[in-house]
Length: 222
Image 1 (spheres, helix red, strand yellow):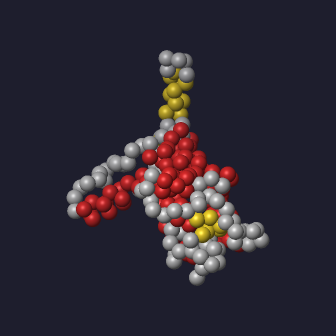
Image 2 (spheres, one colour):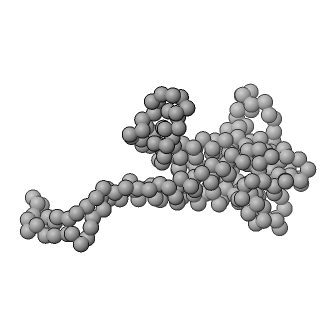
Image 3 (spheres, one colour):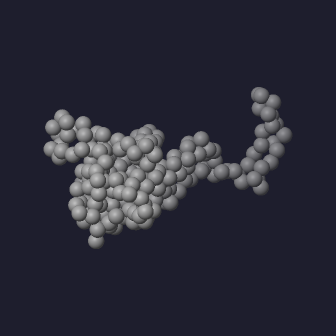
């Protein structure tokens, strides 16, 4: 089954309208996660039971009234974010192959949204490279939000205690780096039509690391 992502006559070209529309939809994911993560960092580490607040009839050195209350440590559940990130990971992976691109729900939605627009076709290879970068960034976020399952899987495969299962072995700055990067790259793709992964791909072609020659970001006639 040929998805609306590809050119009707060749798999070497993709419809840039579909790519940009899909990027606009995926852009909402890092925005949502970044807002939640920001609130997590800057929010209270404790959950206070309002019904247990009592005046101690005492003050601190600043003259402020001291209250006592029952409180528990704030625990964050990243299950919804994990499911959404798994969906984004699926999107990134399946569109890297012409045989599985039709499995992307967002490609079909984007194709339907652009069915009355004239297609603008661009090389497929740079886009695949860009989505590989996206796969790595999304995978890093998944590992950060699920350190214990990831560590248990890696340790079972390696047969050793390579990763800790009692604390987050990922650097604390991981989501602060990967989420803004995803947000920026998707916005540039959707709003400005500039693909960071394609730009990097063109540089790697120029220096001889990649052998695939293509006119990156040059519109092609249908």
